[in-house]
Image (cartoon, rainbow, N blue to C red; front, top):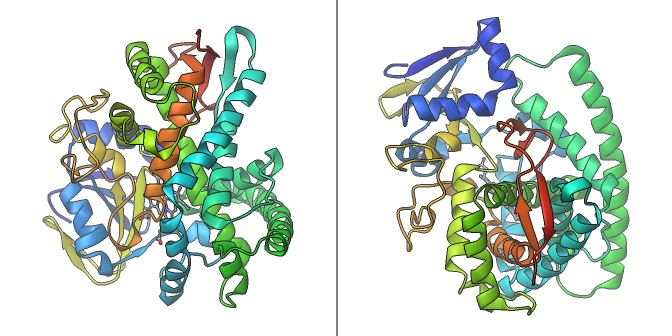
Length: 434
Ligand code: HEM
């Protein structure tokens, strides 16, 4: 590899810092070497971290056929699913589920999101501690999991309770430990997680099978769930877990960071609340309102840019290739740093600042320089659904609640599957004064 800087993870101290502070390290790399690729040297091989948007699009899209998705650790957990497979099976699973996910009608997504996030607001108010303190993550995850299981999969009777969310979290922790284990976590730590993961998977299997059987007995409408049950090549639990996980962990992560940014910038919070009140009043939020909430959508795009829920995308090259000026042999691992791309100050002036006029996400609206949903053949299947869900959720929450930061603690990141804050998003809330 040439023209890249190197980080040597074969050095034990460097490797320990990298493992504990991977996300902070990715933000530092973006700050100190904007757009530059990095060779991450491992004990046995090395991987290339790509930080430039044009090179990322080359890997993911233009030469995407040369790169397999690297999802190894999660495959052991979720089996071969649309999320984890990269083979003819992926093509089959993609063809099966994508029509349902794309066709999840925006109007229905808005109605379901309004209902589930209104419920989340009530739960958050009920769970307040002294000074109105809350940790928002669980309620956001629960609401997002309910939206995706209802509108994308067609579940009517899946009870997304605390135990189910905990089981998902256990699986994600294990998957992530195995997937991003650059020679790191081993021995007892991983074994313990593995045992917990197996127990969690056994419980999820029972719950999903039960809910699938009763939903199908009760409903006659065509649904993704019914298609999955009927398809012999599909591992139902793997597929359902993958789709629910892909849909809820990401959206809940983004919404949590959005609430954090709103709490950190009271003027912006007031401005967006005024826009929501002006457009929606006290009526239920519908799809017709969303197109009138331009600043809220721009804010949502900025949240995804600053705190991308999926901070890196892993790939393995099939044949040797040249990425920019760097030659890589066949079988090389490549990490596309979405953080690096989104915090590239050559493209985004003052990358940590929320600026509603950046127009980073939509080609029609602007520069298309951000990639929170990935790109190419493995691009997110649920981006449209997620965008409608998130705008509705922000509108519901802004109208009902005021958010403040309880303290000025420095940001610490936790990375299991999606990007989270250590200890969760701790905020103070109170009902909006009318
Ligand atoms: C803010 C919310 C979301 C973000 C940031 C997000 C991000 C992503 C990213 C970056 C990928 C590509 C991973 C890669 O290339 O390695 C992906 C894949 C995927 N996402 Fe999302 N996602 C979100 C919400 C959703 C929702 C609501 C669904 C609905 C089910 C969904 C379904 C999927 C599926 C099925 C894939 C796999 C696509 C394939 O390879 O066939 N996502 N997502």
